[in-house]
Length: 117
Image (cartoon, rainbow, N blue to C red; front, side, top):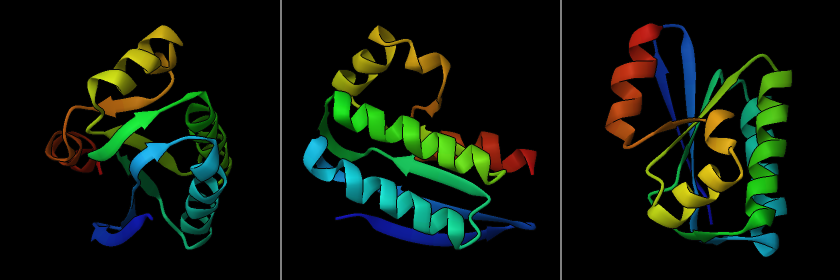
């Protein structure tokens, strides 16, 4: 299940998706739908917090890429935080660490991204 929270920062709306467990083909569609709903609800900044994700496979990575396309098409931004070593390695092996804006912690995200606004 995904947890969604809404916070107002200046005139921007931050929406957070916090998946848990394994992000694979069985959860990819619901993950994409969750991000679509947040974008439609007016999220200017979408943060994917991986703190509770233990494993992600190529289907999960594909879902992230499609989510990023949806977010960008709406004129919003998407960032990722709190990835574990397995997910970090997956991003590096696929060069997706160059595509996604990834932060070590949620606090790092808040101090850097939200201070820009």
